[in-house]
Every structure is written in structure tokens, then in C-alpha cells.
Length: 88
Image (cartoon, rainbow, N blue to C red; front, side):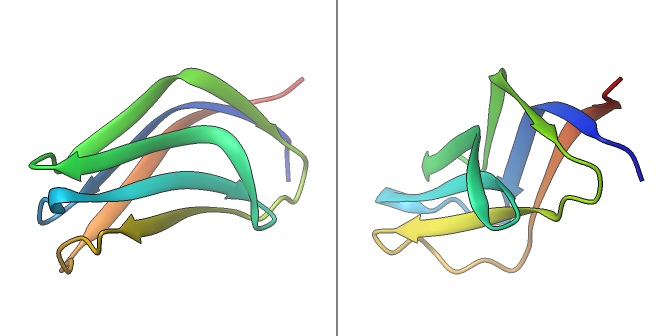
């Protein structure tokens, strides 16, 4: 196991949320929100965060939480990625 520094969050959904609705995507560290976030709204099907950087400790449990508001359109598929490098 190694510690990581991560950035460049990218998230996408198969169906746009729809007018007035959205998916807020947040990378979590041990179920706590980090600064890596973006929002997919309206007719968009993807979002990204190229500004924030987060460091994760060795053995951290990392996930992405998709929080719908509105409610957004149901999804058949969604995904996310981020760029991570070992922390020295």
C-alpha cells in the first residue's frame, strides 16, 4: 500500500439529469467528502474538477458519491476517474 495524491476528477452518467436537476459527484475518503467535486446538471452528461488536489493516506478507502437533486433522470450506467500519483 502507498499514500496517493489525486487530482483531475472526471465523472459521467449515461443520461443527462434533465432541466433543473443534477448529480453532485464527490470523491470521499473513508466516507468523508474531499475537495474533489463536480456537478452534472441539465443536459450535460459529464463533469470534471481540474482545480483541486487531495492526498490519501496508506490504506484509505476511496469512493465517489453521486448525490441527485431534483430528482435527476434514472441512470443505466455511471463512472468516474481521477489521476493519482504516489506521495513521497
